[in-house]
Length: 183
Image (cartoon, rainbow, N blue to C red; front, side, top):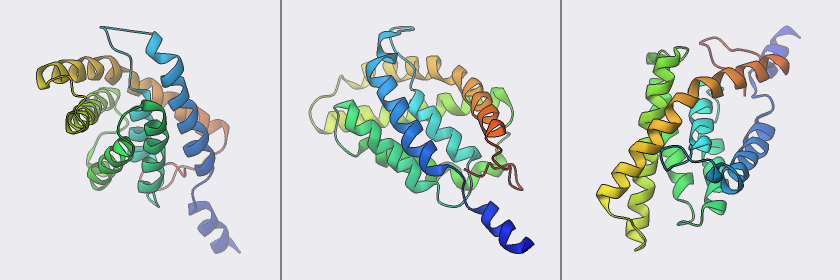
């Protein structure tokens, strides 16, 4: 009996709610509200932080699909080439997943730096996809724009992590060996 309970606890809890509910809510929030709050002429890239949080803290079982699902929800509301964010978020997961244990992921400074790096990379790659379809803004403008988005978004990662960890505690979501949360 104890063995079946342990196996059941390893299955991600509330994943569908966090992926579809949270991903859709953040995508809508960014599409409708966040773009009205400008800092340095840009708005924060909150969905990328959400994907990054699940990549570095989520249950190791099946994070790739949920990251792509969040990206696809963002694609539907972005007006850009369909599938771009889904592919980019999948690549973020594939690149960072094997390196999760090497990161000091509990450290707020590491979280900010990692978030800034990932946000910059995702936004530059998105601008590259816009160039491919003929709607680019130029590489120097894209680089400057992506750097500003990274500078605005990076410092928000510790707050995202803190809020999500508090929510997990409220929902009694287990912390797995290795520091991952069972979502």
